[in-house]
Length: 202
View 1 (cartoon, helix red, strand yellow):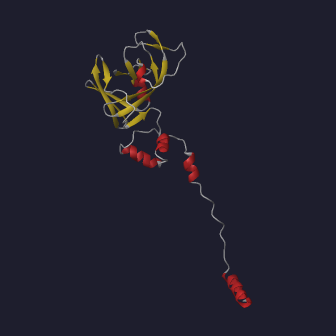
View 2 (spheres, helix red, strand yellow):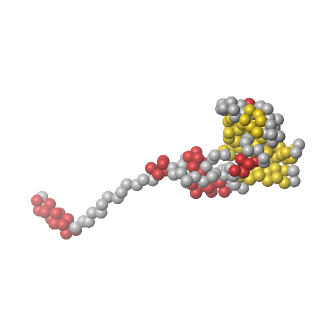
View 3 (cartoon, helix red, strand yellow):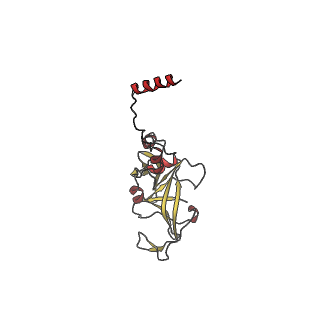
């Protein structure tokens, strides 16, 4: 099943259940307004993983399950909101994030079709999760130093992470140091006197 980029869509929309691992129920009155002013019911909501031919995976969150739509749509507006860069040029589409290439597409039937593969939960290179942050990466990589984490991003060893203002409680606890013992001044003359007394008694 194909996926298409839609710069006007305000939601990611999918018409096929097999793209969802699980589907959360929504209120019966939840609807989707189409571009032609039509109204269609939303049957569920969940996340969808799209694996590009580049090997990168983009996890789209809160995707609407709408069996009535003709095409599976990825909202260009939401991608842009979460830091992705979208370039449309010469009938080609290029998606990147933080200067790193993610995937591409091409003009087809008046829209841009994404070069994505069949869904696979195996052999994943790495995933761009929309809500990812440096704090999450810090945890998953064994509490690595944040400066080293950003160095790995700059070397394109990791996907771009949004910065987090949170502080790691585990790291804070491990860096707590004990107060030094109070300084003790020794009187050398007193020590010599004690030594003499001990010798005399022996």
